Image (tube, rainbow, N blue to C red; front, side):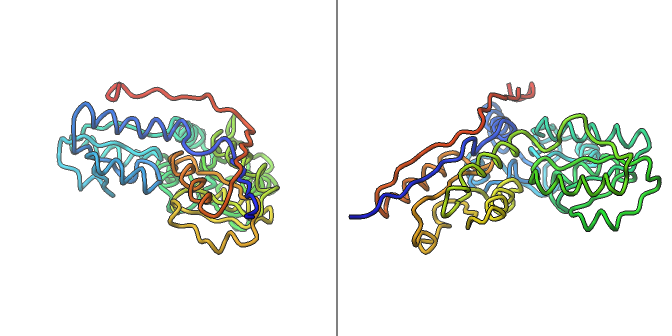
Length: 310
């Protein structure tokens, strides 16, 4: 008789309020105006979401130069710099902004901290769209650090006027270590009034930690360019549990299941919930599966749509 395998479903998982809002903005524009609706960069970092919207008339572009003059363009959930906004205005584009409100909060803090004369240390991952957009708010006053080692090498204009901000999708424990290093070097360090790491990122990391502790293997559903999904894998591995990031069931290797009785399963904030259901269904090919959901928080936050998408 085949031994029953247990799947521990982390909750919360999958879409967050900012992702839901961004996707709905594109869907509403397609329904009201028809295609094509242009989107600068990926609306959210998930290959399935992008493919689905592409099939319905969304056109994803890397830069605004690819958008015809006067066309509708959506800014992704990750936000853009003032230079991008100025370029869109100069080309007469009809802009609909899908920036997550929690990213907008960080942009506002960057402007405020820079305006008071601080060197603003931004903790984040170089090259990420959210990082590029935020740094663009005050490029002459902001510096990027990724690690504790970066902090040790940091030189600032006035050590008594230093503040910090963070990318919204970082690992909480690693970010704390970087902030501690900054505070040790700059005792007058100032930060945001509330955490920049968003509630959804924190909730997904905590819910995963609750199941990774019991699991023999962790599967995280999400795309490789999704920062919060990659952080989830790192959280599990730091706890000593083997963990893998997969876009969908096609990315799972049967070899990973050898000797595994308990599978921890979650999904990044940009991954559709259906993909998690698909993984459970796929696991049932190898024998009976008992599913247990472990909820560590209940999310009730929603964000309203801009007027163009209502």
